[in-house]
Length: 409
Image (cartoon, rainbow, N blue to C red; front, side, top):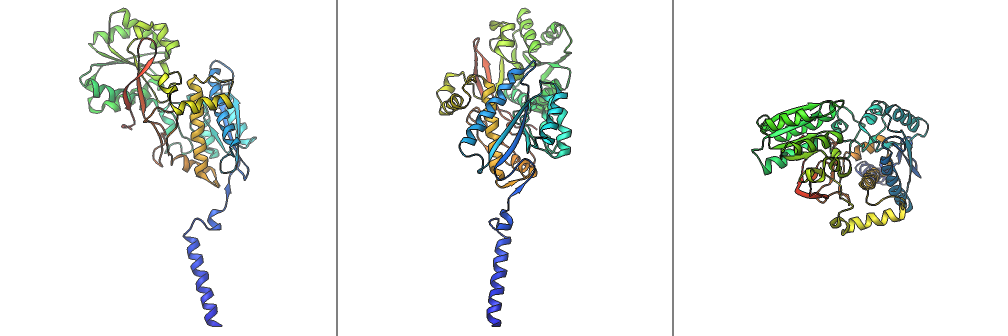
């Protein structure tokens, strides 16, 4: 009797030890939920300008919603459907705050995903941090949205302004290490963020390579004097850390005074329609910029399986959308990142765990440029850090110089 009891006791203890060492035991596999998550659904909030001056951005939310509809139709994420609640802030920060509060306090969403705009995300960041609600994959290139130490509930997605100009600096060092660089910078946080990346990318050579550093205010009528001054400094390279209007004026003025430097234009101000055409397509030939998404209008992209899958998705789930619009590529790709994060969270759908998973990504996305991936860690909250340089041939941009960026922090 005693011997039998002892054997049962030892067996019980061994099982208990094995259970403690295994995540497969019921005690460790127990489902955990925060507000907005359950056995059947996960509520995700999204804030976009469906009205107002930049309502064109609304298609980002529509393409993301379409991808989520596809995932739901295929069974959801770990058996749960995503309820995607996307609301309009008219691109007004005060309205962004109002909508964030409503999503968190009334709709009880699990997380806020892909809110668009720098000022708009800044406006809601403190509130979401206080509530410990994930602010996932922010639609802004501002470097602050990857500062996980200062903002532990916020995560960027696209390459930062800093990462972009690191790439330009790397390209210059590789191709023309003795270049004489002139920089025109908007005199605000937008310009300073870009400029920091440029100097970090040049490293110890920054002071000797940058021969002219000019600034302008957004209220200035022209930048003619700055362009003339930079030419006079003997610069053979011009880097425009400028918004679209001032990029166009700079390219046009340089051509008018016969100055032909190698020109780099930040991606947010490199549009063919709104920048290069006003500057003059001939004058703009040779302009270098950067991208991280595949160009859906590029015949080489259209020949790939990745594009064909994307086009089929658009046809089935977002037929009113324009498959050639890069904004739809962005919404599709960001939504894939969200879904992977939720998959990794498994049945532990706490906000803390979802942030942990968002900081544990190592994945490729089909419509990112080949060679560019999504990687994060507990100390790296910048998911996409590399970019493909592109050069304008007089009609359209073409890839040039390979994949750069990500080396300097």
